[in-house]
Each structure stands twice: as C-alpha cells, then as structure tokens.
Image 1 (cartoon, rainbow, N blue to C red):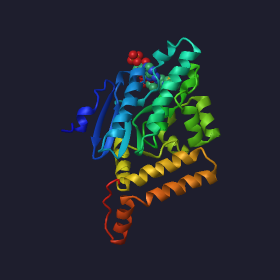
Image 2: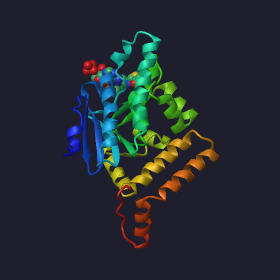
Image 3: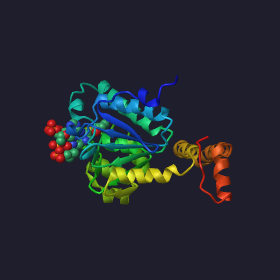
Length: 267
Ligand SMILES: C/C=C/C(=O)SCCNC(=O)CCNC(=O)[C@H](O)C(C)(C)COP(=O)(O)OP(=O)(O)OC[C@H]1O[C@@H](n2cnc3c(N)ncnc32)[C@H](O)[C@@H]1OP(=O)(O)O
C-alpha cells in the first residue's frame, strides 16, 4: 500500500511545513537569532524544496519567518569563521544553489515578509516569484557594512528586479528600506497589516487559475529573462503551443463559453 505523503516529510529543526488549502507554508524558525541562516538551515531549505515539488496537494508555496524577522541574513557568526577565499566561495555557492532551487520551483512562490528581510533574508525573498510585506517590515542588503558583498544571488536578482541605479543605491548604502518605500520601488508587490494573511489572500487569487498554465507562464518568464526578445518570443510560442494541448485549456475555454467557473485538474 502507498504511504501517505505526510509520512515522507522529514523532521526539520529550523523549519515548519504545513499545507493549508493547497498552499504550502514554510516558516523559518530560529527566532532567537532573528531566523539567521546557518548552514543547517540552508540544507533544510533545500530539503523543503523537494517536499514542495513532490507534494501532490501543493499549488502555491509561501515562505515566511517566525517572530519579528523574516530572515535577518546569513549567520554572521558562521561568516566570521570563514578562513579563506575558497571557503568563502563555497559558502556563497551553497546559498546560491539553495535559492536557485527555490527559484526553480514549478509552483508560484510568495515571500511573506513579516519583519526584517536583510542580506540573505532579502536574497531568499528575491528568489521567490512575489513578495508581500507587513507594514513594519524592513528590507535591505547591508553586507557592505560587514565588509562583504551580497553572495546568495542578491547582486544579480536585485539588479534584474529594480535596475542598476536602484539596486546599487540599496547595495552601496546597505540601508533598511521600510515596507512602504519597498512597495514604491517595486521591491515588494503588496503591503498590509499581516504579511502571511496577505500572502494567503494572494495565493487564493492565483489558485483560481489553471495549474499547468501557471507553471508554463513561470517558465516563459524565467527562460525569456536571459534571452534576446526574438528568441524569448519563440519560447513563449512553444509554451503556448504546449498549453493548448492540456485538459486545463479544454476546461478553461469550455467553462468560459458555458458561463460557469472552471474546475481545473492540473492536467
Ligand atoms: C551572503 C549573505 C550574507 C549575509 O546575509 S550577511 C548578514 C546580513 N544581515 C545583517 O547584517 C543584519 C544583522 N542583524 C542586525 O543588524 C540586527 O540584528 C537587526 C537590525 C536585524 C535587529 O536589531 P535588534 O532589534 O537590536 O536585535 P539584535 O539584538 O541585534 O538581534 C537579536 C539576536 O539575533 C542575532 N542576530 C541577528 N541577525 C543575525 C545574523 N544575521 N546572524 C547571526 N545572528 C544574528 C543577534 O546577534 C542577537 O543575538 P543575541 O541575542 O544572542 O545577542
């Protein structure tokens, strides 16, 4: 007999994982250190991406933090112990690999920024597709204040999201950007009282749509980002071609013509 999926979920020390109405909620739980990312926590984040990918229930994933921080960065005590350039590069590559895995998740991902999202914390949020923040959240890349640079993808993902001028403003000053300003900059998509509630509300509005179409749309945007426009448009056309072959397309178009809500199966 097949084991229920829940029994295959590993025990996490620094994370909790739960699924609420098809939304996976991953909560980073190391509140005594403002959820700073030590190496074990990074390994657990990598493991949880496998869980999300394999969990048949999950259609959207939300990442958030326990207590007053989302994630206050990589663990500064561990960084202080790094002895040479090789080990420093390995540390950056570890964080980049884990965040690449999060960025490559097939389902839409949302960072619910409930408090400080600094350094590696903002880099985690930047690896998600969308970011929502509570009004009290503060976001930034303060690495230069420690004599280092963002190393978990921040220099590249912030550049792509905000453009060179605004990215370098945040990277050079290392300042903590308040949520309202982050909204104006386009660093976050929405601001409200409670980041998790906001993320779940956003997830609900995504869940109404065709699951395969969501994955294909994410793939089109992701693959197109690094290409010339003509090549990127070819990728879009190919993925559109795939979308029209799905059961979800048949259901979505039929439901429209029959003036009823679609019932997508993700096939
Ligand atoms: C490649 C990636 C590189 C990086 O990510 S480098 C790290 C970038 N992040 C930062 O530079 C932020 C560091 N943290 C802070 O600046 C402050 O915290 C805050 C402004 C976020 C909050 O300040 P306050 O409210 O005064 O709290 P508190 O007493 O500083 O922090 C509570 C406990 O949390 C620990 N902690 C906070 N951030 C980190 C961290 N990133 N790494 C390791 N520990 C951290 C502290 O040390 C302390 O611990 P204790 O109570 O034992 O003194």
